[in-house]
Length: 63
Image 1 (cartoon, rainbow, N blue to C red):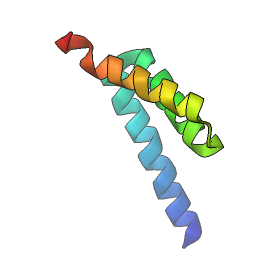
Image 2 (image 1 turned 90 degrees about the horizontal axis):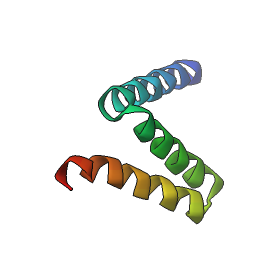
Image 3 (image 1 turned 45 degrees about the horizontal axis):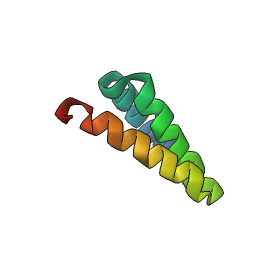
Image 4 (image 1 turned 30 degrees about the vertical axis):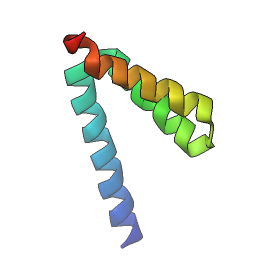
């Protein structure tokens, strides 16, 4: 059962990354990567940089 959960989780993450890349391009992937690494490493600098980058990408058309 844990193997199935890990496989399902990996499929969800890959699918989510593909959606972000198709909608927001490489900048969205870099922001998501920085945010994920920052959260996993408990680094406020990386997670803040990723959050700011994602916010800029999302707010780009409105600016």
